[in-house]
Amino acid sequence: MTQAPSLPSAADVQARLLRAPYHQWLGLQVESVAEGEITLTAKFRDEWIVNPDGGYIHGGILAALVDLGADWALVSHTGKGVPTVDLRVDYHRPARGDLKVVGTVIKTGRLVSAAEANVYDAEGRLVASGRGVYATPAQG
Image (spheres, rainbow, N blue to C red):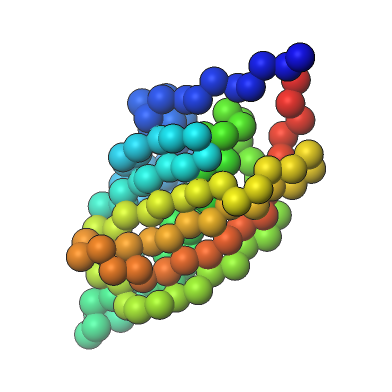
């Protein structure tokens, strides 16, 4: 009988997450980690603005946050990194300010797994959502 991987702590995930310079630049902070779920926050940067007149955030930043939320929800479940195979993002309203991302595992599989993420603005409004498919690491 194989033992399930132990759940990484928020501090463990934070340390792993911030090894990547891009994640540092995004200002990512791990708010909470649960089995198959993660909540991240991203501190607003002026460089995220796509339209200076409207002051809203570029969709590429939102897509990256959807991908990271879904990906790291799977890391909370598998304990290992999972490369993205496919990603779908829907944009619901212009985003401004600090953001919160909630990622949740949908299904884990032997070869691929699926997870989703929602991105919220500082007022708690849904600004983007999406679903990703990720290569599942071999257990053992």
